[in-house]
Length: 315
Length: 325
Image (cartoon, chains in turn purple, brown):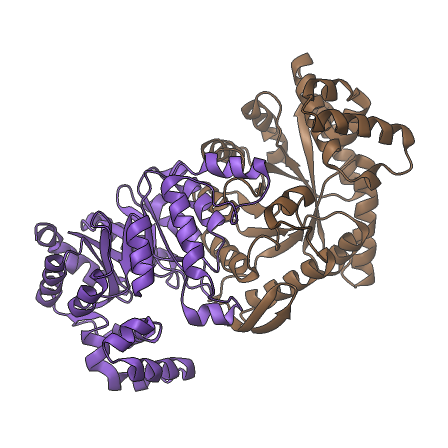
């Protein structure tokens, strides 16, 4: 079982550096940089984390394949790999529906496009309709894409995307951290070789300063959840409600959904509770747990959970 | 006078980093990286350089609003400005038409309007404004870049053609010029005239990015000829208007180049043509040329690529000069 942490790019650089060093020193396996296009782009921040660490895996978790061109993502990771070696992980997904909407990007064909790219990346075959037409460009892209030893993950929450990711990618970043939801999602995995990562908002229970942020992160996951998932768990109404609250920025209203947001869409627990949750996920077949924002915002939480990292490693 | 380093993303990052580190130590002003759109990703390339140098500014030279969503350009520029100790300059241009055509599958449309909208949107985003926009660059609905006090990067234009140069004079913080020496003179006048008409006289920085070839022996000369053959082959015909002899020579070079007969193309490049399209000669001769351009009003000179047979030697040769400058 591997344990990773997620960082978003809205934090001061000095803090990102300090926390990245602390995560590596504490024995975490990976750092995943999330994308929020209204903040500094993750690519320069990924380069910064690579520069400031030595061994820890560094991934994009996730980069939107709709907002960015997949070609640029590939080339960026190839460049990072050239500079910092084989410890990079590419995480791709269509992206958050609200951001896509604000940027005027339609969600249509997301799965098919992503499937083609992931297939291309894993087999280094050229997707003819997505790569520049000239032979020269295609050849160059191909020769640059020696990514066969770089894991490609796909962020997924719905049955079709999970199935596609399991068949084509090296790993799936499941947008669920609750064992019941993960159990449901795993039904759609068709390839047992595919690495399963449970990726969700997390907080050490004593960290009251970040409780509001935890609610927003968990609500964002619920608001953007797949329709099939919502129907399965009867959460359509709750999803609509939190979507409205987020749109109106009435974050105080999220407290009404604490039972749902703090227990099922995030891990909000003591150190023992976090350990217990990781054990449950491991028993279901999860290979990696990624403690997502706002966990990273608390340096002492990173260190505290890091102290028992060795125990998690041997679970 | 400022001396800067020029790289392209087709150069491996290890080599790029080696030359940038050398330029950093040699007191160069900044590094401009041209985005070869079929090669490495320019913002990542520059990030790695920014993080591994201490006194060198970083700049795209250029990237195109046709190849990335404008919000992605903005957030990358913001991140680079954030991590770079000496600041980031966003060099923006339409890009080379043949590459763009193959990348986009069509000719880039309305370049003047696209560049004008791109600058307007980027400036608003860098100011942290909420942006609503529908136009050539897509749609933005209540979009806001969270800048958190990060200073807005400067925006330079790397463009050709009268209308784009005039636009540069109106809205850009600087212009990256490239072309024959005759062209440079005319282009600078256009930009200055336009800046003056827009009450921005003296506000537009001027950068010359020419091919520098340090000539020490015959082999350097051969290398320089090949570079010039490549340059003139990629320039539009209007560049040579009014000079029938040159136009004929260039069409011959272009034809040989298109057939992949580089040796033949190279042989057609006379020393006169070479000196017209690149700064070639001994260090003293190059510096003399640079001084002439400085008199015309150019302020910054980008060395490379290509640097000659020994890039390290070429960069080092400018050390004393860049420190004096």
